[in-house]
Length: 453
Image (cartoon, rainbow, N blue to C red):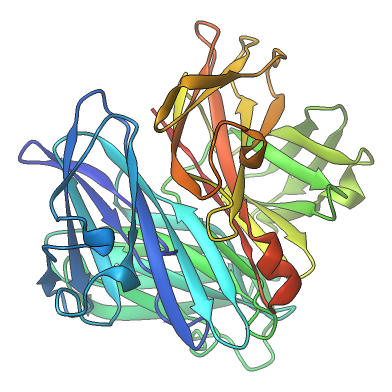
């Protein structure tokens, strides 16, 4: 049930295209993937899925998994999970692909990757609404307490292009990597656990950030892992930052989970960073051109236990950040965001779906206090509305298995709405598979950012 993705939305001949970047098969002995597409428009969407191999050759199966025809139709708010190994091999040979999803209405997608073998890896991430010639990753690791990044870059431009990666470590060490003439719509994968960046040595231990540049527009995702333990954290790159970032979910001893925030500044100049927690208290760090990033480990920064949100503000340049959570071998990551909307599209939630369950955590990122309502695909008559009203900065977690009207085995999309006029929210989704956590070595948890509508 997986496939990692980074997607780009753009209009071409009145059609909306979503481009999905897969991570390469470099996690387990066998990597498999899935991606889930949600119609977030008010009209039916006719959707076509096209796979692009690493040489730039397109493959458009006429049949997907579950005997789904390609193209297919999605009603408003409906979603469909494309399970890549379920596509007949005569329609799509085994291999590594990028994906182009074209639609007659607005759609979004999230994707997941599983590395199978003696140790399991699971990662999930959401996509982008545009490609760019300059992309940033706020957290990149190389031989850092066993962690390595796997940076996947898709060329979403019209022509083949070189792709350049520059990694800057916290201690000032710089490493570079280049891929030449990557075909249009194809991806290249920089696998740091097997490829050493120029400027690094065998003893380099790097916790840093990266800038990815190209003459053509690209999109970027980072799948980080500990090869020996299966710990996996996947997230999407960004093209810009903000002086204010929002974090819906942080943990301190929350069912064994603890969080950290990895923050980087963009551009030159000093910045004092202040994180204000929704349940009270603050943390600060000072960023300079020599030390452009900081890591806030929540149990060391915030005494209150449980889950809570945060608002991060800069006194100077824009910031970018990712939020990590860990519980033993389990790890998950999502992006801090700069804004929200009155409604949020959630492509995939699960209740006892092959052992997977989800929670949706939403934060009030506006100035108007509000309740929040959740509608699940296929259950429009069972809208759940939070009993409490949430002030600016506050968060609420909605645990999908607690929705009694949803059947076991449910997998579908959802829409979260801020009930108060003018209110804005932002949401993230966590997955976990408790049975596999207790019986199988590796990582069985993951997170993704939901989509502003």
